[in-house]
Length: 470
Image 1 (cartoon, rainbow, N blue to C red):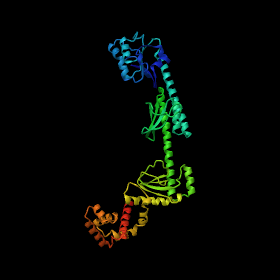
Image 2 (spheres, rainbow, N blue to C red):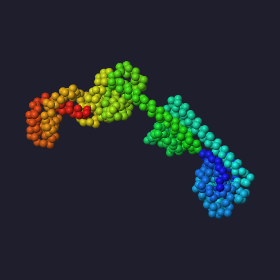
Image 3 (cartoon, rainbow, N blue to C red):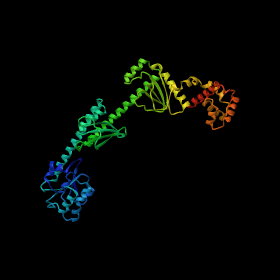
Image 4 (tube, rainbow, N blue to C red):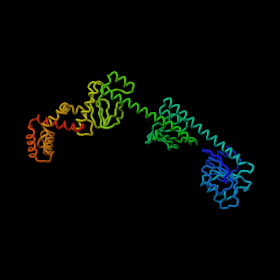
């Protein structure tokens, strides 16, 4: 039968309660090894028959043990059952139904490390429970106060514009232990000792950890290292640190996106010819970036992350970047230098796009093509499109069936060598010669003339460029 209980969510060890509350008026009879158990609630009971339905983890049980005296089986099993229920300690008031705690109960308590106290009859249960309750409330208030003070201090720093390293350095000082913030992949972002010195590797095993969650996503963890033993309220305080770190990460992400958007707009204006050289230099200074003294424009396939480069703009299916001339980029696309600094960037953009198309047609996709490598072909076939290309196609390729067209393409690609073309096509040389005569009959071309072979090569190249563009 339950008489009553008092509850608080935070815990204090039985040893500390015995030293600081009215529990010290009771005499410890058994289970001294369990004085480190933590009590979170005071529970009163008269009869020990239905306790399993009501006792919880961290209960300090006060009882007169009405039914314990004549129940030998219960005496033998009581300590084990209470420990299984999570009871932190038991206080038995003697002088009513028991003169002292039975020996079987004490033996079991010693065996299972359950502190068992005898309370004199003249000491009221309410005196015990009230003093313990006040102690629990006092500890809880101190814990909440410390966490609130830490949270307030770190929020103030964040509001003043402090970045992550400064926030983590202050958190380590407030917690009195090394603190490290790592990202979701476990990579360190900032770590400091309480002294303010950076946290060096190798690091000990973390004593506590709190997740950093922002916008419903896990961004990492805040770790506390046990240079000294963590205090009881360090876990709650570390959670406050994690909330401020999450705010800082959210702000940093937002600022980073805004900065990227401003840089992307700047690149758009640069390659679009919307800025004079003076305006461009002024805008670059505001954004905190440097314009290359000899700029080039790169047009790259897909969305590329270019480490170390600031002037980058992501568009549909491609990335446009203003880079120093001669840059080595590990990406597919085209690159062309400007002939006139900022003023020449629009023309460099157009040439980079043609370098991409022509390079892919000549050497295949998946590589970065420089305009200098395709400039000759650009001069020859850059104008071949629309009606002009159709006219030349009708004259050279349109009359040819697929086998003859393939033979012609291989022949001109082999520099007009019948032997090399035959080897590439896996046919006899006479077969190549026969097919080339048929090409001449159907088109009126003379493939012995370099001019006619060049015309065929340029039309074939223009078709490949057209296909690559499509």
